[in-house]
Amino acid sequence: SAVISQKPSRDICQRGTSLTIQCQVDSQVTMMFWYRQQPGQSLTLIATANQGSEATYESGFVIDKFPISRPNLTFSTLTVSNMSPEDSSIYLCSVDWSAGGGYTFGSGTRLTVV
Amino acid sequence: QKEVEQDPGPLSVPEGAIVSLNCTYSNSAFQYFMWYRQYSRKGPELLMYTYSSGNKEDGRFTAQVDKSSKYISLFIRDSQPSDSATYLCAGTTGNQFYFGTGTSLTVIP
Image (cartoon, rainbow over all chains, first blue to last red; front, side):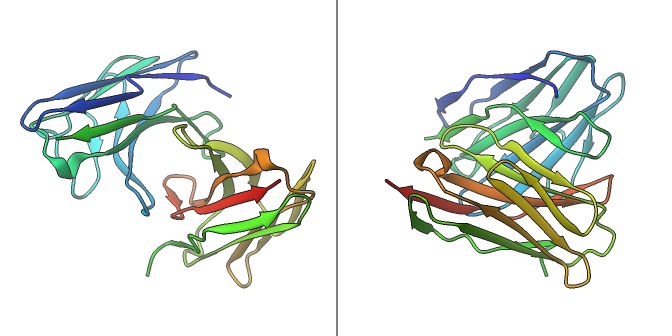
């Protein structure tokens, strides 16, 4: 399976600022996924990032709030923009290494907005 | 109705006990089923992956799928303190993944 390096592992940010989360995969993958994990809730898919095209966002998530870059087949970034305390959560990137057979997740970014 | 329902627990068992973790799902299109283990401050780690109804065993872990009742289970034999984590079940149609909320497990030495 793929190995994912995600950073930062955690951050505390002021409201109104932005944070960019980076995700590096040790092999080339077509799609990368960004999830949010809030306490007591399921993992929620934010968007799917394909190399060379615009990311596809799920209902409730918009590009202005969560811009995503995917410059090559091993790297992606997610920016959480104009943050509010409601954005406090764990953000995870993942790849599907076996065509629907399972995700590998990064270690996550624990974001606290104050 | 959520795609995948999972009892959040918490579940606390003594070391050596057999643990049973369960989920139900509603989507008949699910083809694959997974169990993830998530330690505190870590990302989810794929533990078991199954395709068909029946049992799949890997060491102390057994994943069970009953498609007729839309029920998936994970059994942990001879549980160890290192098994203390949150366990998430998931189903996928092949295109989209749906996760349970996770069950928090503590194995007491």
